[in-house]
Image (cartoon, rainbow over all chains, first blue to last red; front, side, top):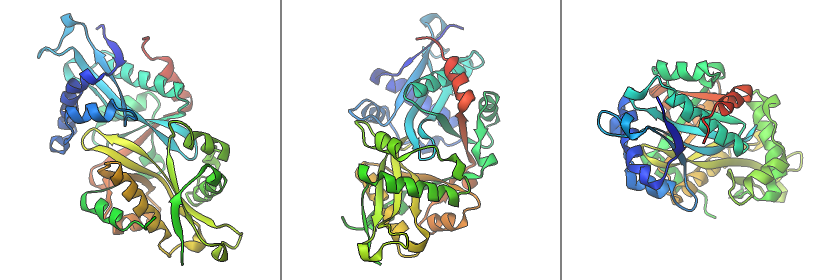
Length: 173
Length: 173
């Protein structure tokens, strides 16, 4: 099926927002989504954006059964390894179910790798849920290493009151 | 013991580079460090820096046995959750062994939380090795959640030839 991978624009944020929710439903945590398309517009399309994004788009004649032509997206940003240097981090990669199996996911992933390499990134990283076998297999087939399995890295988070408590105990300047 | 937490400068990069290697030795992967202090200077102190950093400094009279006054550092950057919004990611947090147990680590961590909150971050995230019990306990005692244990998140990486292969297969613009 013909499709195009292109940079996401402010005008795509409503479509991206719709797919962020679809992805969270797939990841079994839909009630976790608190970000609106207005916030995506603000955070991604400002002076120092927090992220960049790409969308996968099909021609009008191949639109989804609900009438969408933007049928996949990826959202990423730049991080830094003090061992290796600049890294591109893939926060989300999503293709609507009815369009899977046509190379859309691979197209989005490869494009992020290309953009990252152009920014001198030496790594592409991401997180995946342990039960999400289709995604784990997708990445493994392309040569990804699972660092949690191979080296024992765990993901740790502070939020809510725990984050506030830390901030309140910061040493004075 | 008296100490100060302050923003890291370009002039601190040699000291930070020394401690990056000390931390990698502690993490049992010293041969993984490929970043020089010149690269830190370039990547952290340019127009769009890849990271920010803080250092913990003691007065001259409390210098380390090898004569160092910059005895801890943290390096962090901003990421983005499509569920919650801006996040501050703690890449490294390190205090030289002879200065541990004096609140230096907590001071650095809390200051990053405060800086992150000022940037509207709603989360502070990091990665830790499963066998690194002192660090896991340190974060857990302050309310951190282990997302690998609780939700099953795994860290995934592409690098080297695998990353090149992805980039080479990117769809044309």
